[in-house]
Structures are given as structure tokens and as C-alpha cells.
Length: 360
Image (cartoon, rainbow, N blue to C red; front, side, top):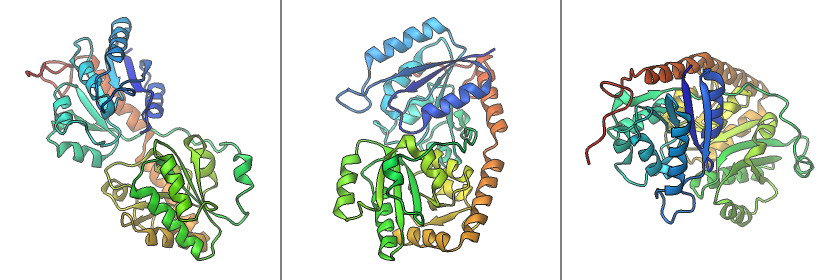
């Protein structure tokens, strides 16, 4: 049995921890989960955490894995580089999204060190390939989705009391950043409020910009209709939502959008490459130009006024996730990756599972 050591960050905000747990439980290899809080208190982003690296090095020596699976993001770039330099086991690097890399040439540099780079969407693969990352090291493996659990629990009492029976409940989930995404969603909700609709927008997330978003919510006087809730409540809100909004202008598909479609919640998403590959406009969801608050409001109003349309789109969305996010196929891909690397057969590096050292 292949021994796999999963290295995950404690300050994950891209769904890496949940995805690592799903992969570890589904693949069938002997898996260890090592959670490290790396680089959080360093003075500059991307700094090297010497203490964290020593803990990681000790864990690799003690557990002697056949494959190391890193879920570290750009914030831990130097730790990933050092991890890839060790010669005890080949390294698989899962990159969840295209972040602002601390160093422009960093992805290409790391790609020469790791044995395989795995991304969840074609759009992310194309984005990394555009940075001249070796295509032989890039593999697309769709996200695994947890089994649908309809018993997500009750809403908090203080929120249940705020929602009227006929509320148009719209949910958006993600990391709270001071960006146009969240502000556009609030403005779209304000347009629906102007039409005297009982709209309530719930933004489930976490992040460092929550205070700024709170101030902005007060400034546009929509405190009674926009609610900021913790990410842990996302399942409860999605079970009750009539519409899910998802805005992003970078490659990738958020796990929350897939879960919304899995639950049969009609989705209105920005028209990016990966969204367009997943959603057929007016069939299993709606695609709108990025940042178009009017289109967001228009589609939500259309779904609210036409229950038959909402039901058809919900059914098509569920079928799309069942057909495209095939659990068995993704698990087989992970098994093949682990098996090929542990046996020393890797398309990424000539002559073995670990690429030769890069000359500085």
C-alpha cells in the first residue's frame, strides 16, 4: 500500500483542507495528515519559516512516505521549495487557485522541483501553462465532492427570526476580500430591494477584510438585507437558498458553486472560462458579464418570478455535477498518480519520480 503524507496549511482559505481529507479517505492509500501553520507571522509575504520547515523535515524522516502531497499555497512558497528539494520521496503539489505569487517566476521555478502539479480545472491548467510551466508536470483532477447531506441543521435563532416567510434568499460563499466582487453583490441586492422585493443576501465567508465590508454595508444602507455569516453556516444557508451568486474574474471554480449545483440551487455566475465550461447559460444556470450588478439582479428576479424555470435549472445543475464531477474517475486519477510516483515512474522527471536538482 502506498504511504502518502499530506501536508496542509492551517491558514487555508481555498478549500485545501477539506479536499485533502476527501482525497485521503477515498483513495485507499495509507495516508498521514500533517497540518502546519507556516509563515503566518513573518514580516513579508512568502517568507521562509525555518521552525516550520524543521517540523516538516522531522515528520518526513519519521514517517518515511512513498509520496508527499503538498497542499501549500503561495504564502508557503519557500517551504514548498525546500520540501521539493528533499530526496526521500517525490512531491505532488496541489494548487487550488492562481494567487498573486510573491515572485513572478516562482511557479516555473517550483515546477522544475516537484514531480507533479495538480489543478482542479482546465482554466487553471491553462493559466499555469501560460507561465511556461512544463505541461508534462500539469494534471487536471476535478475536485471530489462530499456526499450530499440534507440534514445540514437549523439556522441560528437570531437569523431565522429576521427572514420573512416569502424572502428571496440569495447566498454567496467565499473568502472576504476588499474587492469589487462583494461590493457588486451588495449593490445588486440593493437593486432588488429598490423593486420592493423581500430580498435577503447572505454572504458566508471568512477573511481579513470583514470590518471593511461591514462598514461598506452600513454606508450603502443595506444592513437589514445583507448579512455576513461565518463559513461554517454555508451548508445551512445553501439548503434554503433560492439563488446562489458566484463572481470571480480569475480561473477556477469555487467548491461552494459546485456544492450549490449539487444541492439543486440555481446559480448565477460570472462569465469566465471555467464557469462557461461548467454552466450552459439558461440551461443549468445563468452566466453574466463580470461585475454586472444589473444582470445579477435581473436573473435573480427571473428565477423568483418563474418557479418552473428555477426547478428546470436546478434539475439540470444536479445532473451536470453528477455527470462531470465523476467521483470514481477522480479517485482513479489520484490512485494512478500516487502509484506511478511511488514506483518511480513519472512522466514529469526523466529517470525517476523525483526530478533532478536545478542548478542555481
